[in-house]
Every structure is written in structure tokens, then in C-alpha cells.
Image (cartoon, rainbow, N blue to C red; front, side, top):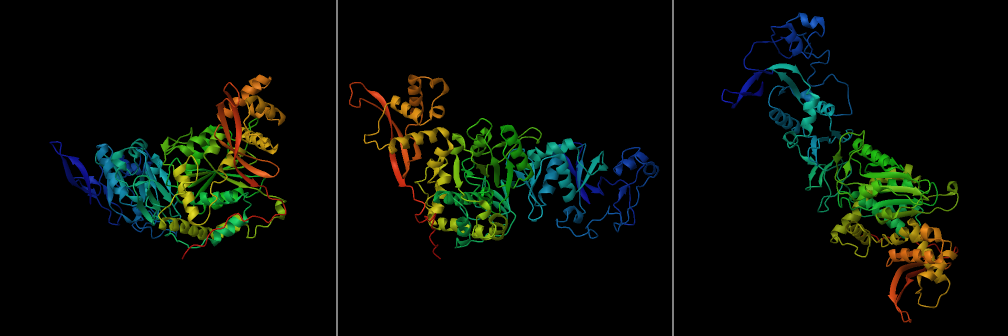
Length: 619
């Protein structure tokens, strides 16, 4: 027995009993073998249509008043309600197999009523959710480990979801017409709030535990942490470790150039566990190596951990890269990390640049649309973006957003020994859960100490950088982002040239205060062979032009820090500009490089410095 909606003479709605899917008490023919009852027909064409056949399909069907009888034992699979005779499957049994109740779709009825009825019935199945965008369709999020998160954004996908979950009967003029909704109606329904508001909203699907706004860990199932933090976690509860031994074994095996690079890699891994925080304001993890096979992909694998990392090959054209990322996210909606792999310099370009990456990492809810990849959708930016490259340098815009990680390998690759089994193919897969537990332990200790921020960290994405820096400080890592200014200098050819200019001045053992007019700096630029880098093409041909060009570039970088090195020291300098009299009658402009810090460059036979020491946690 089912119920459908009918109209009375006054226009009000009446609940009319439906016998076997037909309104009223019309005569029916019941097959005693147990097949689904079907209406007695007076027209052969109606009988054919009532069984999902178009008029004229199959001469045999058109000659009989009654449809063919299907045996109750399901010998042909048509009436197998519970799926008992199906072979074992790694996927859950469709719930429609165990549900004999029908839901009626009146094709000639009021669409709003049908949308509500279907929405209510589907929502009860418990594994369908709406996306966070208005009219954005549904998402299948199953607790079964073999079922990946799947967008339901097309008529075909919606009909499949309906067929597997409820026994739908489509009717016209009170007679069965089939069991699939038309494509037009299904597509409208996926964008209608009448349908969508029956489902709980989901922002993130993950198979690894992540954090709610109060820094508590998500539990298996649906977690409602408020807007932006409605998380479906399809996995086991998190384990929190009080040790960092496994992390240190891996980090010590990697050829990080400095302690800051090591701390930054660890910070990026923490950022993945906190990825639903700071939408559009998370640092771009840039992993660079001085040669091939330095371990860039291994480092990216460590950062992603057990969260899904989707690799996208770098494309020189923005539209192609955009399309690749959109396609990857549509195919894997549970992606946590996007790895833009092996970025290369454009022909004739001196640095890697991408307007798409710049916008994507700074957009709180990026629009995902590319020609040929379906309609536009938006997604809350709960992603961590990694870019890897050899020899390439990032544009100033990308470098400003970066969390720099530099790997420096010396010697022949085949002669190197990491001290652990193959880091990427053996060690990380075998110890992924242990590493994740230790990262949770670092966050847990930080929360226990009151979530202190590292306010000394300077980065455009301050809230993210200061929180990650605070977590690292609590666990004894104090070099986070210490290489930020240095790497910006390396990545930006102009800043690099300015650093060379400043270091050359200090290497010449100048005893004055360092202030010099643009003409003097232009002369030094020419001596160092930096004219093409620092001076615009229109100003290179004359002394006056070079003086003007140097003044323009130094003024543009005033009060910025750059790095450079002499034969004995590594220098951090600030570009300064002043307009004074400088002992003359007339005020004029001069520039200088003020040394902020100086560190001796170690000799080859000096003891190797320890990259990082983490204090043992208090248990």
C-alpha cells in the first residue's frame, strides 16, 4: 500500500489509498505466483506501456492483456527483492533491494510536490548530502571504505542514486509508465531547493581525521562544526601519539638545505591536517631541488600523508592548468592536496608564473569551471597546494604566497644512502599512520598549552603562518619560515640581483656609511654585469639612463630585505633610500644596503650543524 497526492473538487489535497501503485479502487489482476501486481488493461498498447514498453515494441507483448509472469524466486533477477542470490560484493547492497514500498512520481502532477516526496525518501537513506553551494546538487558520501565520494550532478547520476535506494514508479494519468525520471526533471531537481533542502549540507569529505573549529578531532560519520566545517569522516578514530620519533627519522633522511626548510616541510604537513581552516589564506608549499631526484615527490608525499593527494602536471598555459585542476577535483572530490608537479620555465621566461595558481590559493571559494568539464560549481577552499620544480624560480607573486622548501643534494644519486628503507615507496607507506598520529600529538600539545601563536613569523598569510609556527615552537622547532626572505630573493631575479649588488658593496671593505647616489650604484651595476636584469631596456644605452633605471628599481624595493653573500659571510640587508643634504648645500637622494644580520659561511671541514632538534614531549 502506498499513498499519492490527488486533488478534490475544491482544489484541496486528498490522501487517496493506492493499491499497487494505482489511485482509487480500480480493478487489478494479481498473479498468484508472487509477481508484482499489475493493472488489468483494456487496450494492448496500454498494457505494453504499463510495462515500460513503447507502443509497438515487441509484437508478443502487444498481443496479451497481461504482462509476462516473472517467477517469484527471481530466476531472471527481475523480482529479486533482497539480493540473496547475488554474488558477494565489496560494495554495499543497494537499499532498494530490501524495500518493497513504492514512491510514486506523478509525471503529470505538480513538480514541487514530487520534488519534496523524492527528497524526503532519498534523505532517509543517510548517505546522500547536498553541497554547500546554492543549487549545487548532491554528493554521495558513504561510510563504506570501498565507495569513493561521488558528485551527483547529472540526470544519469541522480536516476542511478534513486534506483539503488528507493522503488520509484513513474505514472502518467494514474497508470505506470516506468521507473526513471526524465532527464529534464532530474536536472531541474538537482538545482531546486525544494529537493535539496531535505539533505544535510557537507563541506568536506575525508578518510583521515581533521579538526573542527575548536580544534577537536572529527569523529567517524557526520560532524557539524558549523558553516565551512560540516565534515563527513569515513574512517577510524584518530590516534594521538606523544612521540615524534617516526617523523624525525624521515626528516633526518631528507637533504633539506637548512633547518628552516625542514621546519617548513613539517609545517606543511600540519597545514594539511588543518586544511579546513583559513580558506583562501593558506601558504603555497613550494618544493624546489637543485637537481633531479632530490626527493621532491617524496617530500610532497610526506606532506599529504594519508589524505588524498591529486597530482596535476604543470601546464605553461593557464587555461590548460585550470582545466586539469577542475577535472581532477570533479573526479576526486575528497582531494586534500593538489600537487602541481614538475613546473618548468617557459621558453624565454626567467621565472615560473601562473595567474590561475595565484588566484586559486587566495580565493576562499574558487569557481570550478572549464570548458568541456560540466557546469560551473564552487567549492570552499579546503585544499593545500604544492608546486614542485627543479632549477625554476617562482614569480614574485607566487613567492610572496609560498612556504619555501629547498632540497639540496650533493654527489651521485646512486651512491646516496638515506638511512631508512626507500623513503617514498617503503618507509612512508609503512609508517603513514604513525606519522599522522605524531602530527596529531603535536597539535594536541599546542592546544593543551592554549594555542599560542608565533607572532615573530612574517608572512602575507599571517593567521595560518602564526598558528603553524606556534605548533612547531611548542614541539621545539624554531626555524619555521626563517628562509622566507632568502627564498624570495632567490626566486625573484631582480631581488637576487639587488642582493648581489649589496653584498658586493660590503665585500669591498667600504668604511663609509654606505650611502651613495644612483649614479654610483649604476656604475657598480655595470661592473657586476647586472644591467640587463636591473635596468629596463630603454634606459641601458647611456649613463644618464642607467642612473635613472637604478634609481627606479631601488626606490621600488626600498625598505625590503634581500640576501646576498660575500666569500666569508651570508648577509641579510635592508634597502634604504633617503633624501638629505649629506654634507652638501642641496638635498638629494641616496641609497644604501644596511646589514641586518651576518652569519659566517662554514668551511667544508667544520662539524655539520644539526638541522633541527625537537624537545622530547612531556608525558
